[in-house]
Amino acid sequence: DTEVTQTPKHLVMGMTNKKSLKCEQHMGHRAMYWYKQKAKKPPELMFVYSYEKLSINESVPSRFSPECPNSSLLNLHLHALQPEDSALYLCASSQVQGQGYEQYFGPGTRLTVT
Amino acid sequence: LAKTTQPISMDSYEGQEVNITCSHNNIATNDYITWYQQFPSQGPRFIIQGYKTKVTNEVASLFIPADRKSSTLSLPRVSLSDTAVYYCLVGWSGGYQKVTFGTGTKLQVIP
Image 1 (tube, rainbow over the protein chains, first blue to last red):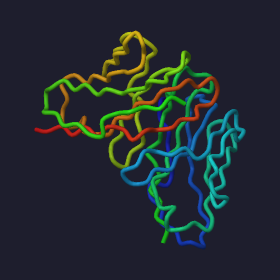
Image 2 (cartoon, rainbow over the protein chains, first blue to last red; image 1 turned 45 degrees about the vertical axis):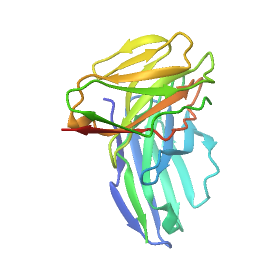
Image 3 (cartoon, rainbow over the protein chains, first blue to last red; image 1 turned 90 degrees about the horizontal axis):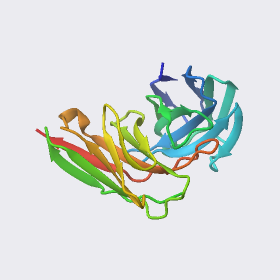
């Protein structure tokens, strides 16, 4: 099974709402990632978890709060977002000790902030 | 992290072989070369990865010259469904993978 699942597929939220994005994988990968992708741009790394611990935070605003409850799950909690945060949010996973950059991506959550 | 340079876009007719070249002059000794494919509104999909010479799988081939300063992704007999953005990444995880995607190459396959 090389599948990474993400829910929901689409999300519309107001600037005062609190919502969460969810990601799940069952490949035994111990590294998990959140990316943000704006239209016609490459994915931008936001957070990296390694062995369920936050390893990288790419200076992401605190209105985005990641959580890794166990080795298969990754959440991204959203609060007080801005319209410019509207984007495709991608989750990925990989082995921690790989050779190159072989990651498996989910289909993404399309987020619209109104 | 090694910087990569790819053509912004390419056009090809169906049934042709397509070669997309990526330049990575400052590649480090431990770095691998990885290619991803991305369709609109979908997550990137891992295509192929290599360190040197030639790697082939059921989807593509990757050619890496001896100096490793460039690499070429080869897609045999493309179809309309191969229309996508292709990203070349260079690096070595050695732990978690702090990936930086470049601008990628938009491949348009024409009927």
